[in-house]
Amino acid sequence: MSTESDVPIEPLRLNKLDLAELSDEDVMERCAMGSEAAFRALVQRYRTRIMNLVCRLINDRDRAEEISQEVFLRVFRNRERYRKSGKFSTWIFTIAVNLTKNEIRSRVRHRGTFSLDAMEEESGGQGVSFPDSKPLPDEDLNANEIGRKVAEALHKIPARYREAVVLRDVEGLSYEEVGQILRIPGGTVRSRINRARLMLKERLKPFLSLEDV
Amino acid sequence: MNCRSAEPLLSAFLEDDLSQNERRSLEAHLLACRRCSLAARELRATLELLENVPYVETSPHFEEDLLARIRSGEALRPTVVEWLRGLLEPARLRPLFLAGAGACAVWIGVVLVNPNGIIRRESVAGLTARSPQASTQTPGKPAASNPSATQLNAPKIEVASLPAPSAGRETPRASRQLNGSSGSNASSPSGDTVIESDWPTATSSQDAAVPNPGSRYDDQYITDQFFLERDLGGSNNPTITPVSDRPSDDVYITF
Image 1 (cartoon, each protein chain N blue to C red):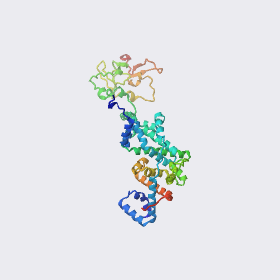
Image 2 (cartoon, each protein chain N blue to C red):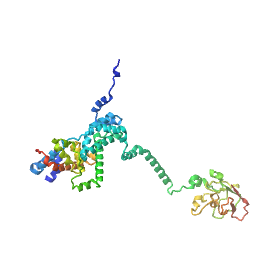
Image 3 (cartoon, one colour):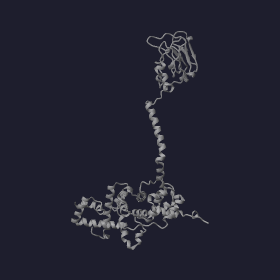
Image 4 (spheres, rainbow over the protein chains, first blue to last red):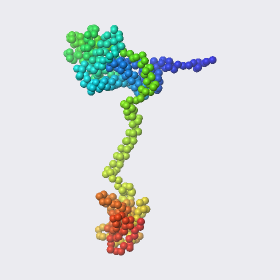
């Protein structure tokens, strides 16, 4: 005869229920204590956002997936270093942006160019782009031609403006968070975002449906 | 407000991030300027496009690949930067920092105490023994014996009687150590006292340019009352001869 205490408990299921109600910071704290379920929860919450961010910045889907994996590996490796006082989203986006910058730098070096600015000058101020032979998922959808045009326009603007506008307008972060991630003051953040929007406006003009302000 | 000053404010205007005065000025300009009004509408449409850009999804096996890399341990090796950062963590650096600070404090202390960088021999043998209060004795008062460890192995010269000191100069008339570093006083058998305070110390009279192979028989401790005769071959049997014409039978050397 089995008592109530003999009933096996499914720890993963319970953990999932618990974790769904916790904030990112609390889940990360559990991850730091060695909970694999907590780490999986974080991966599920952020993998699409990280992948999207990296892909929008380097325009290379395969490489973006590798970098996204590396982002989560860094999170796991440095889980004990995370301080709950800071926002987890800011922390993980900072890791992603830094790894993406490293990727862009290594590509520039591989091309024999010594700086992003030099490369931007070479392209006549058109920005640095690394077109991928493989189509983005947007391209698979005929109805999403505009989305593809946006991605193309993003890759035509200089990297420092692109990363600011992607974090703000694609990822929906606040100006303060963008400033923390890019380590630039608030005024510079606003200036870069405004400039990036104006550049994108010029490139996307043929696809805009205008309404009254 | 003109077009040039209106353009940087368009983003903030669309996000409702302007002050009331700025907003009123810009709205007035947008009503009057067709070009800026069009730019504002284009910018709003651009923002809507950006907000609606579809997300790029990860591959279906993203999570499994990631967990497999973690479980294998192969992907968990720290990078060079992480390894260096680990080395430079405050918790690791604290003991090194404290040790370095301690070493610096000791060094600064040594420099402050001894700014010339010379450790004087008196300080090693006991500076108090050389102080005037300890070493200078007034005539008529017998000097208290103050033996030190260096005295035990040092040869002694005992002078039973010596010629009278020359005028204007007080000369030591009794026993003292040949190595002389401790500078202790002793009464002569006849009860005469010894004044040593004006005697040159080993270090103060030594010339660094002059080699001194046999410090045990250092002739600087021999006053003008004695000659130290030592052959250049470094003989171990030096002889001490009084300066005076008197016979030397009143000089005794004890090793």
